[in-house]
Image (tube, one colour):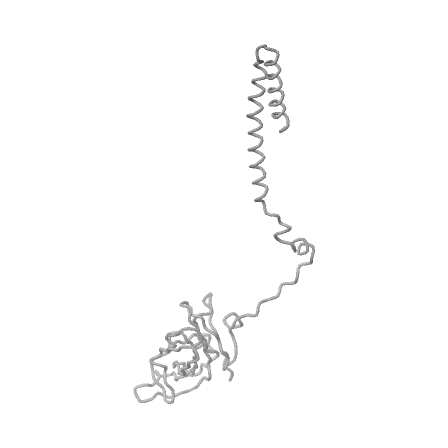
Amino acid sequence: MFFIPPLGIVFGHVSRHAAKRAYRAKSGIALAGLILGYIFTAAGIIVAIAVGAAVSTIPTAVSAHPAASAQASAPAAAPTAAAPSPSQSALTGPVGTMYTVISSDGTSYDVTLQKVVDPVTGTNEFYTPDSGKRFVAAVFRITGRGGTAKDDANMLAAVNGSDEQVYQSVVDEVAGYTNFNAGDFNVSPAVSQTGAVVFAVPSGVSVASVQWSAGFGSDRSATWTVSG
């Protein structure tokens, strides 16, 4: 279609030149053809330039991704499960198992239940269990991993009894063990603290497990099973 306007220009000039040589009036049709020829020729050039510029900006998938066709024809590889982090692993284990806690503020630490002392006595006559109960101490070792981690061990630890009841800590002090700093621990990377959380458990009820309820997501708790 771009060849027609130039022909209009050519024929228009030829017609006007012939009229000039024959000393006759110049044809209006020839003039109109000449004008329209110039207009459409210019428009055609502009459109051609615009189309060429647009085509040059279209990316070529094959050149941008030379391995795309090979990847499409190759069989899909079997998915490989990522190795679970400590906080994603099974959260139940025997006494001595270490769990990694990641707090909401991004700090992290390792917590290990080293042993359960059952029974344990108070430091003096002011620290005695209520009638029908005994003191049980859960001894934890806490080691910092990332940032400065601090919390209250008395609030995080609990005992699950053989009667399927959950027992929270008490503030009593027991002989031979300290309760961190009134329950509070504060550890930086590679720094450890050891302390005992004390519970008052009814006589006749054994300790089935001990749990730690911070930083495992979805309200989950790490649990240590207690044998015997």
